[in-house]
Length: 326
Length: 297
Picture 1 (cartoon, rainbow over the protein chains, first blue to last red):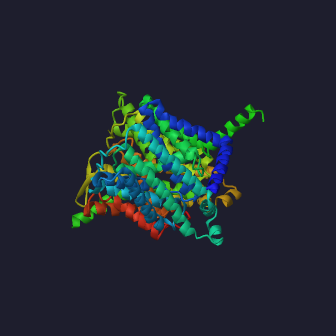
Picture 2: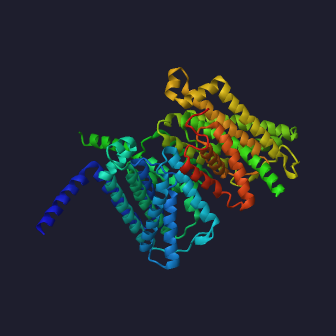
Picture 3: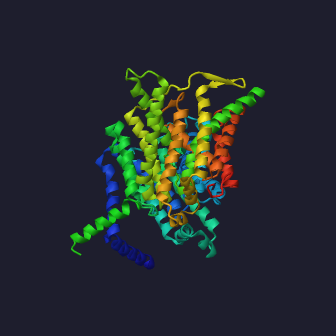
């Protein structure tokens, strides 16, 4: 009992040091800001932020596979879609509670990540990207032409999880937990091994790392989180159709992760919030909105090669140090 | 049965001719600079729309009523714009991001998205129809098909031959091959690699522009069509071998006959998925493609 208490206290002091540091402070500030969103009582804003949070998990899962393990996938929508479909099917046809359905859907996504990962192991670079793209497209066409699970129409009219604000906190909890776990994974020994494989696969092999197993592990972990986001996405919009397998969704993940900054995990938050909020706030401009959006996208990709998060934080930090007179 | 065989022969050749035009440039750009150009389909889209708009503009002038002339002017305008767009895309977007391969992929994807929205914004999201410049139909081996498609086959064969000759015989073609084999060594012997890559992007844009000029008339055009053509170019390139020019020509015709065959034997809705499965099997069994040797020849 004593020991536990002691441990708790040291944790608390470490937390205080972290919270007073620059990055910790910013993170806490953003988290509090996020949790305050439902208190404004604006349902529309909450809906947009929910979408952004779900896409954050999706983008971060791509970042884990591509940014850390170096396995660039163009078919991430496959994991996203399969989990979404299974979740929707279990909620609709079996009547399972949503919480259980998400776990079953995620399990299927992990199985599929193995199914896609094992044959794609021998592919590298653009070939791997295209192989995964082909997998996602096959799934898209199978669900489009097939008659199972609702065919072209998909499954719709799923029950709501709860009111928008309840849903908001559930999604926020999922997002924060997923991001912390992913960050912990990439900071752990496993993350170091993945980075070694990314930087020099032959070298990693020579150093006694079983690259095959670790690449598969990276695929599974990434598939797991993509699956969680797919299930949440379907529960949020209460419908699913074959369009979730479109390459467009895979590219959304890639774009959001790289706007924020590849190989950062947290960059996905910045990327997907920027992406979702920007496309939503430009909507009043009607026809011109997507054109402006596309132009901004080109400019961001062109002029910020390491994403917008890290350079921005550096600037803010310099400013902060200047204000405090250091 | 014999009619079926002839149909497959003719429509497969037409499909193959289109695919060759689409895939050759895509493969060339990948082979020379390792650039995966996702805006390739958007080049088709923008050419088709520029041709459509120019025809629209010119026919409102009272003196011009001779359609082939109008179409010719429109085609020249469309082709020169798409080649310019290709050069500007390379200089402004691809070259600065060349070091990170994912950067090129992202920026060309954003480009493709931009063109789709541009077409929607300047024109409208509806589908349009370009009147074919070669009127009437042709009957060959008992099969009747639009004469425009014959023009497509001839145009494709001529262009593909010209580009192949250009790459194997001319000085610029030789430097293109040199850069694709070893960019650093090519730079050491005094080849301007940026210039060579820009030329190959321009050739690629020209080829896909010709595909649009020859294939879009008689077909419907809409802002979203670019993605479909990109996917076709993609699949043929993988099938034939990335960066291999004979590979992509061979791959285009094999794929053309294969999709036509599945169209007739199974069902048109299934034929969309067959190329994908072929690609997947190809990637797993022979990732470098039919004739791919990581070398452009």
